Length: 103
Figure (tube, helix red, strand yellow):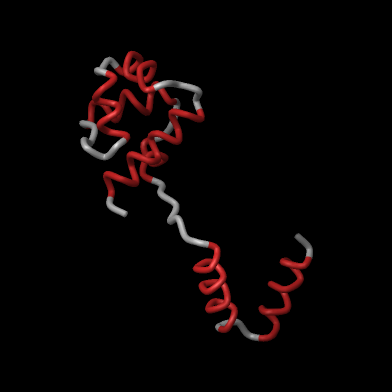
């Protein structure tokens, strides 16, 4: 996924967590609602000034808008986990087992 798409998804997630509509956010940061829509659909990217206003209104640090979690399927997660487990020594593997069994 590219930067614009990742950013778009993150902004939309944060906006919804704050209970704001696109229209409400647009009003708070003084842009047209269509501009927020374009950003959240990765058709546009905010200027530095708009980034500052978004962070202020959403009460977040700049970095939070750029912290992206990779979305992976359960099967891919299992494969990656097993691959990592193969690299562990016996002591580490027992430790991980005990942690997982305790969840």
